[in-house]
Length: 418
Image 1: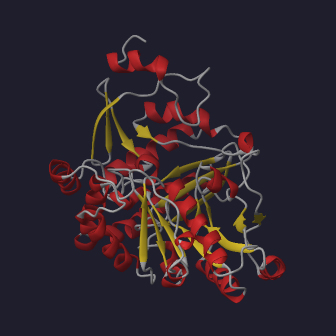
Image 2 (image 1 turned 180 degrees about the horizontal axis):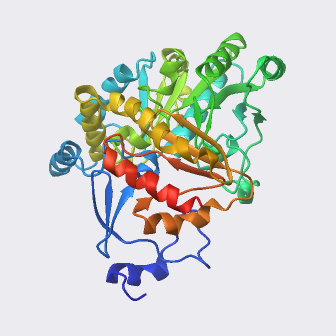
């Protein structure tokens, strides 16, 4: 492994990478620093990050306000268990999140990752009905092309893909429907939901954008109608805004565009500006009140060791500071036009099936059979960190990306789409 840093050479024989066939894998790029929208490699190169480290680094890397908050918290209290003990950062954060989300949320349950936030949401929904005296409502409704995480419950409500195929023996059996898109499919959807309502605990979906399932968009009208059907049949509605939340779709939250309020809301990724691992499951008063009882077994029995991690919560509070005092949402809105202007010219390139943009998300969908993963090394050679998957090349950059940095991404895509 000539040319690689010593730490990579020594560690490579012991590392197991995500979503990677290790038998054929090449060593990854060695990153020695990051700032703003750029990754600094050990070999001296810099890459413009077009996907914000899996969509999380919304304010850019090493934002000084978030870094300062992390350092200050680490010096005072890095971690303490959250059962029987309280510390300031998560208590302040919980109150701020309920206010910031503007969706009538009352309570916040903290976790370490988005997948776990989804697991907690599913537990809340199942136990809600058990506590209400309807224990047979144990199924979940989800949608084709949906993705909600890699843990067992989250896989059970995600679409069939390489993410879950090998683990079918683990996953629970639920209802997976086509996302309705017109009057006929809505009628069919409503009829199906009505038929299974006595078994359904909740419906879970990614509002407006299905991310890892192919970067597929749907309208606010569709989202609003799905929420209406859930209300009509008294089925809990779980909004998975782990990827779409905190401005990514051009609104503060995707649910805001449809003016809906979920019963349970999952947050993660950009919650800390991508600086620390942290996720949260927020519950409405209706859901939380069903757990209040003198009976111990009606309590929510879940408790991650590192839930409400002090440093992570400090980072999240600092990120909310930035959303409150800087034009973060306006930056995301402006990115929509910039992404459209930069990606639209590729619509007529050979192999391109569609170009679409939603907020700070830009997508080039390729025709079936095009191996977009093979484009990754060439994109790096042209100074761009972009990770195409399935049949899509997509951009979800930090909101702070400059015009010049966006042009590096557009130029790289143009050079590989030949």
